[in-house]
Length: 258
Image 1: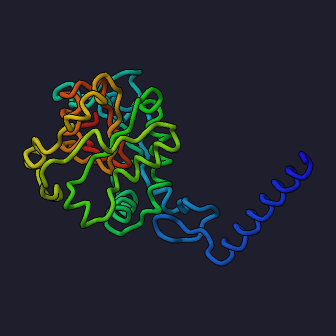
Image 2: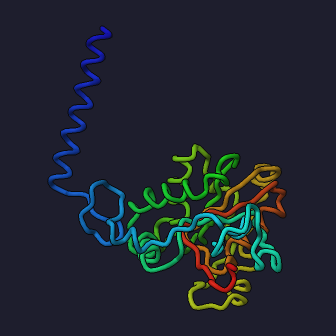
Image 3: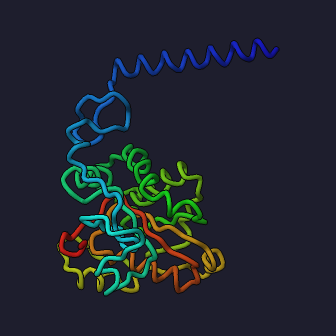
């Protein structure tokens, strides 16, 4: 019986390999950004990879913004010291430049839900230290009317992908957007902050699930941080022990990073 089971397992693996070969011959893998041929599904071609500006240490331990030189561990940027954010730490995969923008827009506005998995994989790596002891991931919520229009929440899709890789639960019920806000595109820092002020809340029934928990907010892009700040404040007011933020890309102000 054991031998038969082993033969069946080997047969199943061989069949799966054959199916993958047929699929790759009919639909060869392409770059997730430009559709050029690549070796594996969910990958970037060499040209797009080279134009994606990854964020790695040295960076500000609080904001996650890169430093031009390594001046030692645990350093904070002047921006983090002057205006500490409501969240504890932020981490991002890459600068919000050409390739990152193309990927985010394809996921968010182009119905490319297939991108959540490869982007989430990169986010899980970039945010490994945040995820190591996190109790749950909390995607930035959409207002129900916008969710109905868009049909899915890109932040929730990314959180699901990160959660599967990191082995952390995703809690969509801990934070709600209680009023619809205008688009943040084109707004100044002050206008963005006013736009989302008071827009997020922890439902009364979820307060007990937030209190004392280490939570990681998940979003696609960090621009000025206004949205994540508003979300972090709502979770902190409800008693969260720690609130970190994890995004795929972030805008980096070269003057603020030094």
